[in-house]
Amino acid sequence: MKTPAGKECHYYYEDFNRGRNRQECRLLHTSQQMAWRPADCTHCPVPDILWANASPDLVLKASVNKGFLGFGRHIHVTAICKKHDIVIDDPFVGCWQCAKERPNLADLLEGKDP
Image 1: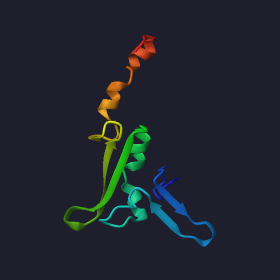
Image 2 (image 1 turned 90 degrees about the vertical axis):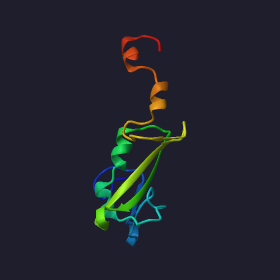
Image 3 (image 1 turned 180 degrees about the horizontal axis):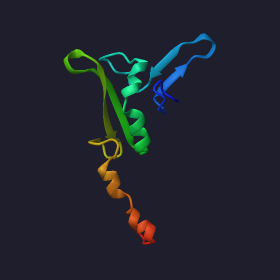
Image 4 (image 1 turned 180 degrees about the vertical axis):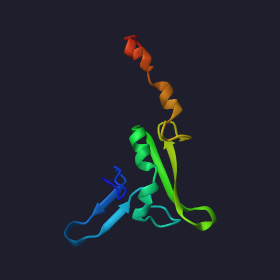
């Protein structure tokens, strides 16, 4: 579903059918620190992470935090590989252990057996 910022994100949900007025981020729904607002979608990195990394083993956890000196808001995202049970440093790239298990792309293009 498209977020208020115009990006595709499967954690965002809205329902305006028949007078309902419901918008929620299902990833940040469990965040206890600060409540989610539709304006948070503007600077959220989650849609870009989901677009760049389509791993089925990727688990994202996010929270809304206050900015510097309490001004502004930012979203902190933690990525975890549920296959290897490790925290991923760069969620845009993915798990390095999963990458080692994949065959080499150059070998596939040349027709070699992995």
